[in-house]
Each structure stands twice: as C-alpha cells, then as structure tokens.
Image (cartoon, rainbow, N blue to C red; front, side, top):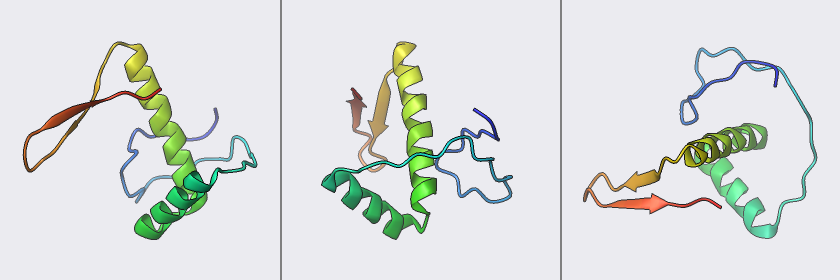
Length: 88
C-alpha cells in the first residue's frame, strides 16, 4: 500500500496530508449497504470514498486485533454496560 496511513479512524482529518491513490475499484453494494452508506454520508458529510476507505482501515484493524487474541468491547458511557463484539 502506498500513501500515508493513519490510525485516526474517527478523526476529522484536519491538517493531515492527503494519501495517494493506491487502487481504484468498482463495487456493487447490496441494498442495505447502499442505504447504510447514504446514512453515513448524510450524518458525517464525508464522501463515499472517504467512508469506504475508513471502513476498510477499521475492518483491517479489528481483524488484526481479533487474530491477536484481543476482544472488541463496546461500553455504554452512560451506564457502564459492556458488550463484546464479534466480527466474522
């Protein structure tokens, strides 16, 4: 992979150099994924390309962590309740 890489998946991207294009692909989304992508775009004002790039980077991070034997845990800030997330 070429270009800059950042672990700031949830950051706003301010003051970061733009990565170079490593690959171009065309994909066909199932209906639900297309709807989810549109909701994310509406909510975040990010481009579809930015959302897909972040999703792939996040998925790679989660997969690497799970392969290393780590758990992905979601914690409700209000109640302190935690749930373990399993990604197949």
